Amino acid sequence: MLGRADTHVHTKYSGIGTLGPLFFPESVSDPEDVVKHATRLGDDVLCITDHNTMKGAFKAREAARKYEDLDLVMGEEISTSEGEIIGLWLNEEIPKGMTAEETVDAIRAQGGVVVAPHPFSLHVPSLQDRIFNLDIDAIETINAGHIDSYSNSQAQRVANTHGRWATLGASDAHSMPTMGHAWTEYRGLGEEDLRRSIMRRECYARGYSVPIDKAIDWSIGVVMQADLQIIRSMLGLIRSYDADDPVQCKIQQLPTHKKILGLVGSFFYLLPPMPHVASILSGRWLSKKVRQISATPAAIDKNSMDVKSSESPLDDL
Image (cartoon, rainbow, N blue to C red; front, side, top):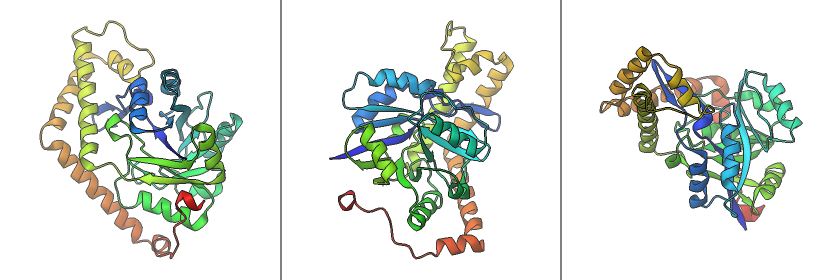
């Protein structure tokens, strides 16, 4: 029997992102809804890995108790001074801002599993070549949130060449429509078999990057959700709020003039075809970064390596 796990999923507790003067939720997904959607997708293990918090993971664990066919693994995507690291099978939050080594040690102290998410990302903090001298169990070779031509392919090339880590597929979903595009396949069923497969490097990255239209839909959705919260706050319709919800807390604390500026900025962002223009410009920027990397001698050497894929079918494991 082959299991299916999503090892990198976010909820609304992942915090606030910024785009110039705009701020927006990293995710607007409620943990209970994320759990329910994972069961619809056929996942038997779901790992909640919010940015620098485990509040969403604790809430998801409670929601998952209603489903006998889904195991919930509590994790955290931790911002270190050298890039992001995921800890899985955690019991307590690990603070951000430590060195990569200190963060790995903190994960190990809880008996957790260490993962390098999107290790060669071009647009989010990543470990890059630091993975070679850290005590890491697994790296993501398919991260569905990365649509450039470099990040996932470079992670796969490195994994094929060195064979030191388990290779994972993960949605890195910041919205429910972006769940399910990448996952980890492993022999067995449930979190114990998943963990065993990771430690034995007997798991397989499956899936593909999120289609561009869904990425655009996500950006529109989170901006509109933030606008709705701002309007409700200005009209006095939010009388009580979840003190753990970073979006609600930020909006409630903003002075009125900043709320208005936020609405004005998002209005211009949402005007057609601005979301699509922003996506095109982002794609061109990423393409330029890929060309710059490929032009360096070190990158040329890496990209020209004749390696045989280590991603064997599970039947051969």
